[in-house]
Amino acid sequence: MLGVIIGIVAILLGASIILRRAGVPAGGHRLVQIFSSRFMGIILVLIGGFMLLSSSFILVDANSVGHLKRIYAFEELPEGRIIALDGEKGPQAQILGPGFHFIPLVRVLYDFEEWDVVTIPEGYYGQLTALDGDAMPSGMFMAPAIADADVGDMLKADSFLTKGGLRGPQETVLKPGQYRLNRYLFDIRLDENTNATIIPAGHVGVVKSNVSQPGINCIEEEVSASSVSREALTVPLVPRGCVGIWKDPLFPGAYYLNRQAYEVTLVDTRVQTWEYKGGYVKRIIDLSVDQQGNIQQNERSVQEQIPSDAADRAVYVKVEGWDIPLELRALVQVDPDNAPVVVGSVGGLEEIENRILTPAIRSIVRNVAGASIRVQDKNADGTPVQPATYTVRPTKVLDLIENRDALEQTIEQQIKIEGNKAGVDIREIRLGEPAIPPELLVSRLRVQLADQLSTAYERETDAQQKRIETEQARSTADEQPRLVEAQIAVQVANQREQERAALGRAERQYLEELARGQRAQVDVLGQDRVALLQALEKLLTSLERKPELVGLVGKLVPNTVVGGDSGFAGAAALLGASLGQAQQPAANRAAGGQ
Image (cartoon, rainbow, N blue to C red):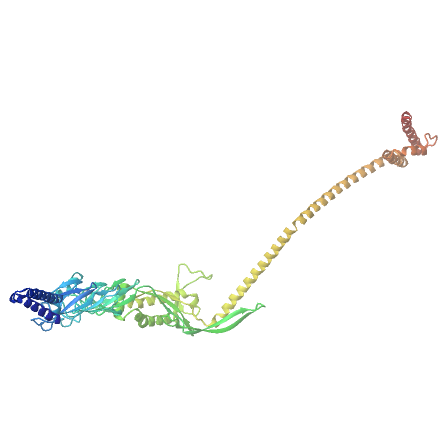
């Protein structure tokens, strides 16, 4: 303001100086004064004009929004309004974008402020509150959402104020991006509570709306979790866009929902595992075998803790007077269509588990396992009877092991009914290992261990026999050369034995034939003559082998023997004659050689 006053004073002073130039007397010295005074007046006018112009423009930064608040005006704002549309005093609806703006005396008539551009990051939304506008109707706590096609226009202050924008919290939110808004009109909230609503995979979002959209026929409908059970949970639901719990859930994705207008409850639609285990002391009898093969037993106890992720502790069932902890696992799933019923009736899946299904599961398991069981009849050899027949009888302790399938089927059938009433699908029930008192199992375990020991002994015996056979085979292989040599020697000895036996038989036959010949000779010639002939034969054989003995024999035996009737004499004469004849050619050969 001071600059404007100084500028006006400078212009008036300069003009007065310029206008007084006509009254100055003539003369050289005075001429200089005239020109000097005119020059000074022009300078003053220019200075005053610049000061006035400098108060008539605004330069707005690229990342800012210019806001004007009028100080001097002839009209006051209407009562109840804070934003001026027609140049009244107060905050103006007009905002200034980046760059140079010329407005006469803008810095005189207005206060100027720069606000940063509103930036909404990804994954968040901006919560809008309008500080001016029409009054909100009775019973409405939040202005209805603006159609997406009209949001851009309604964010302009003049459009919002002239087209029925309501003062107060807005259901419409600013999605990620940058916005140039009149901050005199709109208050923007952006913090950790204005993040987008994310529905992850395997979940749905059940919406409880606090606002309703215009033009929607909002009629509540009683929806039941099961169409076949009159005892099923029911809850009133409304169409999307109405106040209340929406009948249709939100499926996986990102939603920029105003948390003041909508409450979203996530419901896990994946298969859930509820385990009932731990919370008891388990007694165990361990069997062992000493070096002598005797079975020994030792008792010990184990404290079974409840896992942190378990739905509840194990269920105690009373069978044949015994209190037996029974662990089990339930697979459950919520159908997306039943999610609004689950939320509307009890609040969520966890509440369904704690308030409805867990007590039902414990009760059903105790009733089924501790009462009777339906088992298939079997033949004497243990095979099922065909066609199948069944018998219902009181449950025995060992049925928890031997007929577990039958118990599971009965429990599962009854629990599925309770689950359907609550809008939860029970996929299956599986019983765990029961903590049966070890006294009931010792005899069976001892028999099993004895059978295993017997089997182990038989296998060890078979293994030992196979080892012996293997060693024998290995030794036989090592002695194979000697065995072959011995076998050959045996075969040679057998061959020689056979050969000698044949020679013996031939010699015997020869001697027998010879004896028969000799007996024939004896019968013809007599015993003495045969003996003589044999002696001569042997002598001739000897002489044949050694001819040098011929001359000696010739000297000892006479050439002619006269007289005598004995055979020996005749034979000697003949031998002498033969030797004489044999010597004669020898002598002749000797003479001729000389």
